[in-house]
Length: 136
Image 1 (cartoon, one colour):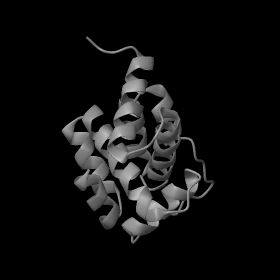
Image 2: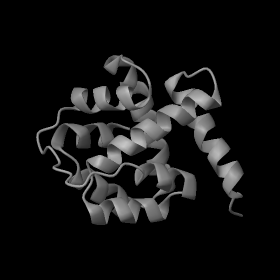
Image 3: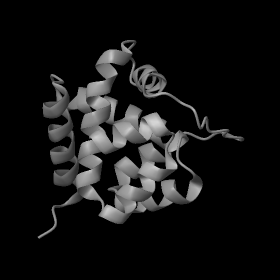
Image 4: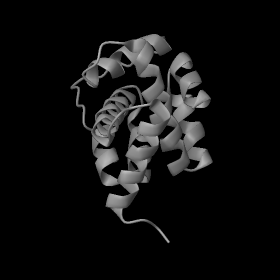
């Protein structure tokens, strides 16, 4: 039986908070939004749309929430730079700590989507970010 949207989100934030050692669900929500917004910037439009359709509405809104008139994706983005971007979007400055919530959000999102979409997202990302995706 599928969970109502509110319970699914609460469970999502609980899993992210536990995996990334965050103190409250509000912290987990802020970090999850930061990770998803940053992820959305580095995916091509079709992959981002497919991933958004597979996620609950609030998470999909975060994934699609950043708009750039011309979004030039960096094919050589390092995992560290990605984590720095996540940290800044989440109101933090430590890219080393940002790795934990990034992996937690990636892992929790991967549990919510099918294997084909997981592979598609991994292929759409720059190599080092894709490695983070696979590691989660």
